Image (cartoon, rainbow, N blue to C red):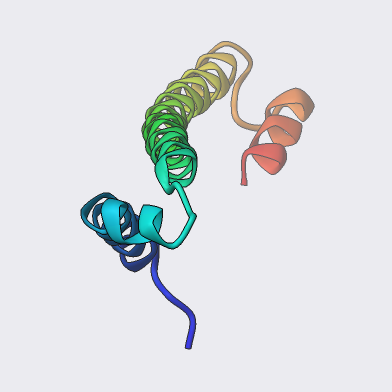
Length: 105
């Protein structure tokens, strides 16, 4: 069974808490958990920071996609309006107008 990110974060937090609570017991057996607690705490903070950056990047990408689509739609409408302008100037039977209509469709 694969753990979710939330379950992994919870496991790390619980491990830190248990090591802190069991400090004296572990020290009595010759193990000082302070270095392990510090390592786990630092790695957890780094993971949180990286995840926040990832979420910001995803939000930025979504905004950029919306902006790109908006600009593309505006460009397409402007190009279509140009076809209508050229059609009005040259008439619908003109060869250029025929070419423009073909590439639009």
